[in-house]
Image (tube, rainbow, N blue to C red; front, top):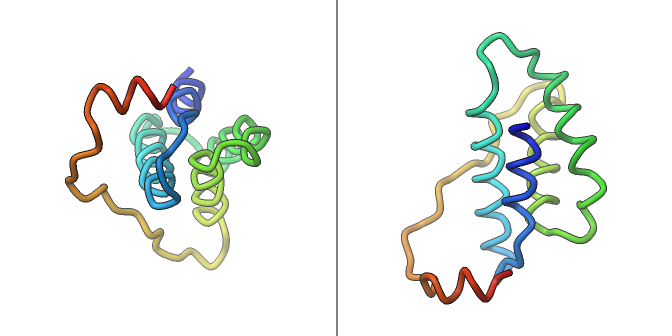
Length: 100
């Protein structure tokens, strides 16, 4: 259920490639934070990728999410480039409504 919610939230129209990257990273962090402590990470990452890959071409935020999933299981392991978005005014409620 958690991956479905994350993918649903990522299906927005980002205002720029940078915003798509920020949202994709936030989606990955949300998905990761929702995993059980006993979960098999590789299996969960594969499951999430298989659910998201069909949207990769049409949703840039999901493409970023998929790229992070792939990078997280490649060997040798490397640190992922994750960051919280820098605080900025983005238009508030009106911009959120217009993004749908």
